[in-house]
Structure formats: structure tokens, C-alpha cells
Amino acid sequence: MTTPAPGIHRGLAGVVVDTTEISTVIQETNSLTYRGYPVQDLAARRSFEEVAYLLRYGELPDAAQLTAFQARERALRPLDRTTLELLTRLPGTCHPMDVLRTAVSFFGAEDPTEDDGSPAAHHAKSLTLLARLPTVVAADQRRRRDLPPIPPDPALGYAENFFHMCFGSVPDPEVVRCFEISLILYAEHSFNASTFTARVVTSTLSDLYSAVTAAIGALKGPLHGGANEAVMHMLHEIGDPARAGAWLAEALAAKRKIMGFGHRVYRHGDSRVPIMQEALDRLVARTATPEATRLAALHTALREAVLTRRGIHPNLDYPAGLAYHLMGFDIPAFTPIFVMSRITGWTAHITEQLGHNALIRPLASYDGRGQRPVPEPAPRARQRGAGAPDA
Ligand SMILES: CC(=O)SCCNC(=O)CCNC(=O)[C@H](O)C(C)(C)COP(=O)(O)OP(=O)(O)OC[C@H]1O[C@@H](n2cnc3c(N)ncnc32)[C@H](O)[C@@H]1OP(=O)(O)O
Ligand SMILES: O=C([O-])CC(=O)C(=O)O
Image (tube, rainbow, N blue to C red):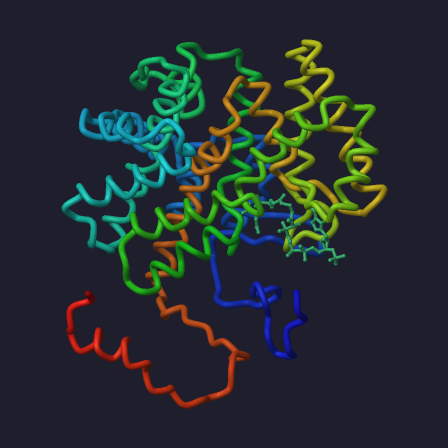
């Protein structure tokens, strides 16, 4: 890759493009706050629904606000027949992120208020997506297992209901809590690539569904959300903890990126990893199968090898990928699960962008061919351009 000229910030690295009140990623202290609250404390003390409310409305809910929010979210979960039919028409070979992207696009197409960008309309649409996306993800995972969808259960919380819709049962509270912690940690991360994508689309005064559809496309990539799936593929490829060092040496020699490691903003470790790693350790201890023990040993061996050889720390996708596997989710569902959580951050940013909008349109420094005259077309091409038949 060529070195960019001075003044050019390839990948917008280090560029501050706007203000935000939603979250801050503090590079120096490796910390993260949502609306001013440290994410560690939110993960320790609050439910995902409370965090979703906080991101949307700016404050944690009181008891009555939470009850009303949960009641609305639970009522909005079911998918209608048309949506379920649409999902089953998509080829089973496509990635579940394609299914989710299509579903959000479809929700926009059938919403008569699609273009209403008022805060009240945004609150309603955001809550609808928050409620419906897990139903899409679960139905799609079951379809790929040749199983019929399981309707949502309004008696269950957000995390519990997702297990219920995927597997027909809810695991013990420790597993549910580990999942909920992952949702809280994945919910928001300032101007990451997918959130920025959503803000770019919104800045043209396009609608919320278009912005979310584009954000899903950005999150799918393996340098971003797709890394949680890539982590699990990589662990399967290595297989044996004893091979971690040799595998890493080969991968680095081949200039491969080690999935689940590195970060654009954090240089000394992702603030969310210690919390997720603790939750993963509890999950491994509870699962206690030979496979879980082997994968956990491999996970640790690779983490230590990457840190020793390259000084690169894991990001959230590293512990989350293994945790989702141990919870029983299929690998292609991992990034869609990330969407179920990040929808809260995306939609908060979409509303914020509209609140102080400026079209996002950077400049580029041209380094193509110098200006040159357009040559006269060859005679045959000129004839066709004039509308003459081809033969
Ligand atoms: C939730 C999330 O989205 S978190 C990110 C998830 N993505 C991944 O885990 C994919 C793997 N990681 C990466 O590709 C990168 O670390 C990124 C894309 C996340 C960040 O990349 P950037 O900020 O552009 O850093 P960049 O790629 O320039 O890396 C700087 C140096 O560290 C190296 N490096 C960074 N991450 C890795 C990695 N995972 N494996 C190997 N080398 C790496 C680069 O090769 C580069 O080395 P060099 O200076 O010798 O060329
Ligand atoms: O902030 C980033 O660049 C990527 C990330 O960790 C996230 O979106 O959670």
C-alpha cells in the first residue's frame, strides 16, 4: 500500500469529524462510557433493556419507565406472515447478515412513516427494530437447521427470549447473564465503521431503515463485526492448543490478520475485553466439556502468543466469538447477534446526526492521470453511437 501524502488521513485515522453525547472511547485509559456511565458498571449492574433505554433517551429508566419500555418491546417482537415468508424465500446459501439486511430493508418498505425523521418517529422505529431483529435472527438460524420458527414469548426478557426462540428453552441464569453482558458491551462504540456508515446515510436526509441497512453491510466485514465469526473459524482451523504458536508463526509469515486482535482506537487493550473474558471464563467452567476445555486452552494460548510475538491485544470479538459458540449458536449467527445489540447505538447516532446535521462529504486528493484530450471515436463506434443497427 502506498503511503498517503501529508494531510491525507487514509481510513480517516485520527480524524475527529463531529461531536457526540452518546459514548466516549478513551484511548489513554482504555475505557468506555455510555452517556457518562462506565460500561463495566453497566455490565455489572444493569440489564440490556436498561442500557438500550439509556442509549436512546440519555438517562437510565426509573422502574415505571422500564416497565413501559419492556412492555412495548415485548409486544413488538412477532413477525407477520409476509415477513416470515420473505425470509424463507431467501437462498439458504446466503449469509444470515444478508437476511438481516434484507429484513430491515423490507421493514422500511412496508412502513408508511418511513420518511418521518422526527424524534418521536425515531423512538418508535428504533424500538420496533430492537424488538424484531432477534426474531429474524432466531427464525433464520432455525430455518438453516430445518426447524420451524418459535414465536417470541412476551413473558421473557430480551436475552432469555432470544434463547427461547433459537432453542425452545432458556439456559441457566449464568449463561443468560453472560449473553446479556455481551449485548451490553456490543451496544455502542462511538464512530466505528458501521455507526459512521449510518451517520453518512442519515446526513443525506435519507431514512432510518436505509441507514441501518447500510450499517449492517458495514458490520458484516471481517475487519469489523464479522471478526467474531472469523475468530471461531480460526480456532477450529488451529484445533490443538499445542499448535497455537506454530500456527501463529505461519499466519504472520503469510501476512494474515489474526482475527479478534487489534483495534483502530485502543492500542493497549480493548476496555470491554476483561469483562467479557471473565464472563467467558465462568461459562467455560460451567460448561466443563472436553471441547470447551480444549477451546478455552487454545484461546488462551493464542492470546498469549499474539501478545508475546506482536504485542497486539484482543478486541471484544475474541472472547465473544468463543462465548457464542459455547452457548450453542451457529457461527454465522454471531455477527447478527452483534446487530441485535448495536441497533441501539446505531439508532441513537442516527437521531443525533439529524439533530445537528451536516452533509458528510469529504474531499479526495486526485492522483490519477493528468488532464488529456478525449480522442475521436473509432469509425465503427461512431456509427453505433448514431443509432445505426449493429449487424
Ligand atoms: C468490534 C470490532 O469491530 S473490533 C475489530 C475487529 N476486527 C478484527 O479483529 C480484525 C483483525 N484486526 C485488524 O485487522 C486490525 O487490527 C483493525 C482493522 C481492527 C484495525 O486496523 P488499523 O487501525 O487500520 O491498524 P493496522 O491494520 O494499520 O495495524 C497496525 C499494525 O498492526 C498490525 N496488526 C493490527 N492488527 C493485526 C492483527 N489482527 N493481526 C496481525 N497484525 C495486525 C498491522 O499489520 C500493522 O502492522 P505494520 O505496521 O507492521 O504494517
Ligand atoms: O470502534 C471500532 O472501531 C470497532 C469496535 O470495536 C466496535 O464497533 O465495537
